[in-house]
Length: 299
Length: 299
Image (cartoon, rainbow over all chains, first blue to last red):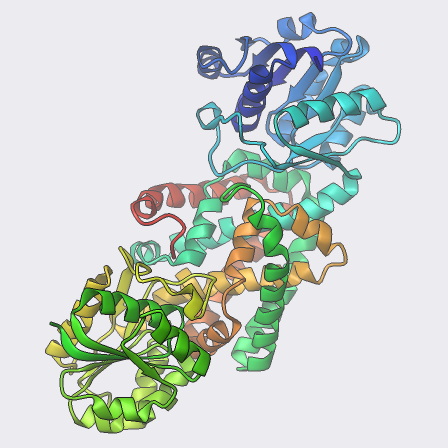
């Protein structure tokens, strides 16, 4: 038994999938859920994702005791409002974690709400998701063999870290630990920047007059981009704002490299093009094996 | 019977796959192949991709008669050298087509070599491929339910167009006809631009000092990009040079949109971000159904 009770706030793709995985595992006696949508609450109960759920958060929080776990699985910029409703729980020694894609903004939120980040608040981020969203996309195997990054602070409670870690492992994930700043820098490049590029490309082309032809003859490259651009706009709006500084750096770096490539095409500088394409292919071939060991098509 | 003989010049992914599909169909009595690599020639014969193959092109060309078909399946910028070796065949009424991703440069090449584009030269482009290349990646089902675009000129021979079209249909493809300029404009956006973005992103990140972390925690977005960036550098070098003008236009347009997005992130202009992401998602959802009807993972 990892915890008596787990309360998941936000029953979308990530929250719903985690609740379901933990409930199936029986490592928590009771899995509770909360959503602002009555329809989501009904579906979560009807499909056995949770034992009980409610659109009212506070009555559920009132049930929690020391050692119980709250998972905040709402969009990044909503974490602060949720934290404000967890003051009493934090005082009772309840462990809190979250799943937001940006950790710096969440740590700032916790500091703003509590004065200091509580020792039992362990920020986390599952590198799993897809262009689908909502409870209908819920899948208890979503985290199987996926990476989950926890970003505890120096004063974080060791036992709280172990508890959160054990929950994710139960859901099948590999858990690793990273500093908050490092997490946000790495993810700004591997996830946030690519999404900005995909959204921009699809939006640029959708505005072209011949867009029917464009989408009809979409070759592999573009189709992969359109898939990413199907992701939830609210979630990505929040991420872009919350990880603003790291993302702006990544964008500036990318834009410089793209301008260099454009100049090489303009100047018919074939050797520059060949060098860029070959270096990229080498990197891909080197790391490709790593990806081949993970689930195909997963994020 | 579509033609007595088909000769495929260049036995890589595309040439090898087409030769193999046509040979299995028995719509040509003899399928001949040519490659500059002795190893590829041996493999093509040993695996039954062709009836016969040779590293010497001219003896094979000498066998061809009126109504036979030559498919040039070499990288885009090599088409011209190959065309120069097909003068005698053109005079005998042999039909010629190609598979290059850029059609304007190929038409220019034909004009330069023959004075005018021969009526029996029918430029073509199968929208099929993958990040894999070479005869080892050959797959006779590669073209199944994929689009092939032919770009005949006003004076092109109707029967030659029908013959080339019939060959592709035999390989399972949907054939459509488009003007040369339209093809190059559409493909510059749907295929060539996305490849430039993917190559640039992967190359940019591979140069970062923390690149082990970056590639390890690659989320879905970035992994799709790295897959595209695994494509053949020579092929993409040729495409970038051959479709320079259309690609430069597409890049300029994309760079402007990306700068707008970067400014919105800098200014914390949430409504601009939400609009871009929502428009892109709408376009993706609208066209997504089209893609769902094609083979998953195909290009």
